[in-house]
Image (cartoon, rainbow, N blue to C red; front, top):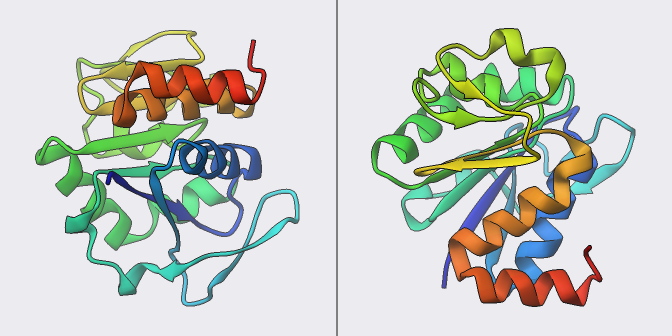
Length: 182
């Protein structure tokens, strides 16, 4: 079974994180929500509190196939400032495992040099922070093991792409049909 870890930091964008969790679970993919703080309760950028399953320090990320970085402010900055998150992202990218980031979170990948020469998308106001990538205006972009999404409005597109990457296009289509995605 494929395993995905969704990192949550105070100030995360709720739609981006929870759409990913929901659609991956509908596809029968194991998803673990992980708080990067010392509290299981994480507060989104719009005041929605989410109880995570685990704390960052409790996880052996070697068992996972993908990590997901939701955007939102100050969630993205909180993820960016966490040395453990940065290390896991670098390790995953280096080992060919999937790293997915949406909205402002691709700036984390850019700071780590992981978007150089890659096709990517991100929230329009952070485009100037993305160095060396071939930016597109697509809702979602997959280039090798790096998957980026544009914004909250592309959360379903992003999540369905993650399902496709991990479980195949047939499973992604099944999930899309089940939610009447057009």
